[in-house]
Length: 80
Image 1 (cartoon, rainbow, N blue to C red):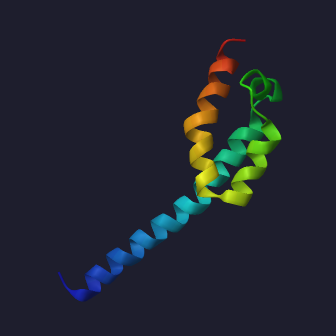
Image 2 (cartoon, one colour):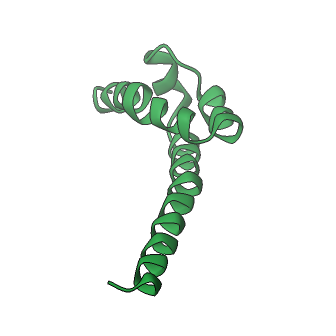
């Protein structure tokens, strides 16, 4: 491998990380915004909170939403 190929690979990895840092919180914001407020309330959470938190804390809030909150909200929504 040449140094140029390694540099191109590093640039691609950096771009993928940047895309993840932007797209994952954006996905969470859109997902929370399109779900019913009553589903969040039934899951003991707050819809507005999970629309705002990814703006403030980015990737960290997005991971928490995807791992802890979204499954509860989906489960509540499926049982209506």
